[in-house]
Image (tube, rainbow, N blue to C red):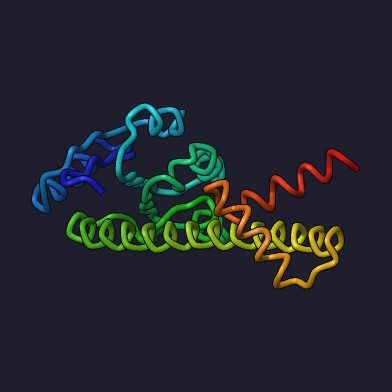
Length: 194
């Protein structure tokens, strides 16, 4: 996150928006923009590219949550949603849409900064988890390709698994490539020849 965070506040009540802005100004040097109308929220978030989105809404609808999910904003930045009341299942839907903090019982200006801090921390934690999951999936896919390539070498040359891997590794070193890249090229070439 940059030194000066940019925050979009989605709040239709002007007085309440000013209270939120004042409370944030007391907490630190933020670049704050207020959106008074939640329609076309995805477009507005995309247009401003804030670091954090703070939504204060009396009773959220599934439409707003769907628009948040479509905006892909929650996957790119923390989103804190303050609601006065919540229907059954809306908090779960909000979390699935990517909301980092879902606070029922409305927004109280004194609680805004600590909740934003928690939303940022939670967002970073989930971001790390998504990154680790993607890396694990990639490593698993690479492992599968390497195993297929080893199997092909074992069959073609009549060698054991360790020797097949040594052949792959030597080819990778000679080509200044990763073993997974050489294995993928071998599997692709074999697929074209069969």
